[in-house]
Length: 236
Image (cartoon, rainbow, N blue to C red; front, side, top):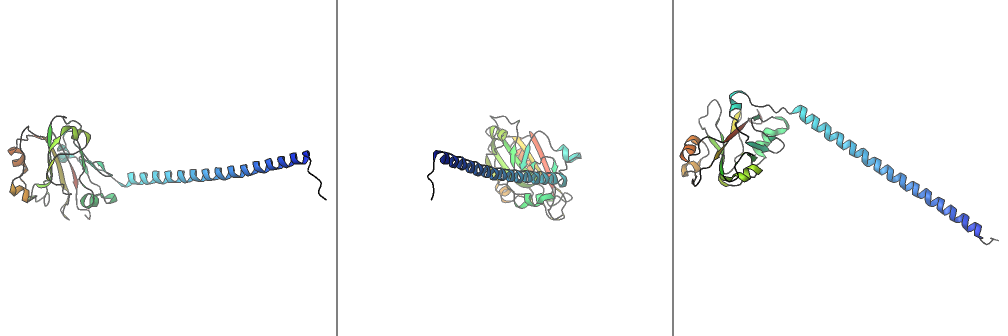
């Protein structure tokens, strides 16, 4: 026959319940610590993986700068940014990571920035290839790739290329086995009240564009800044 629980028994039961609660709490804390440790190890592994990938990227990609006459074309601080490449001014586009293919087939127009632009002035940007169809036989010089006028200096300083587009951006497309092509960017200060346009003949074709005549016709003078990059067909 069970004897009635006395005050001492109830006290012991409470002690046992407290001990069990403490043990359960310890188990929960162990699980939480294990989870946190696992998350930390995963984070460390991911960080090491990214670090390794970055290290491999830096080791396998050689961004060679232009030299000689090609480097002399780069004047002023005109900056041209493509995704992943950064400012490619006065640079050969490397073949690694399919950059030459991506600049030809994937990426849209680059971001253009000119920190020295005067806020209250307008500018003209020309992108052209003087090596069409090849540098050794440039019979279609200049091939017009981009022409934008009425660009505000304040936008240029901020890297926002807004203006009136006379020729939409055309990706660099050097033909196979034609060697390296120069893709040149010229930035001009736009004369006040000058109505700049392309003639119907100019607008009808991109190739054999008389760039110098265009510059003279609209009194653009010398570029305030210029830069270029070189690339060739992605399979060459």
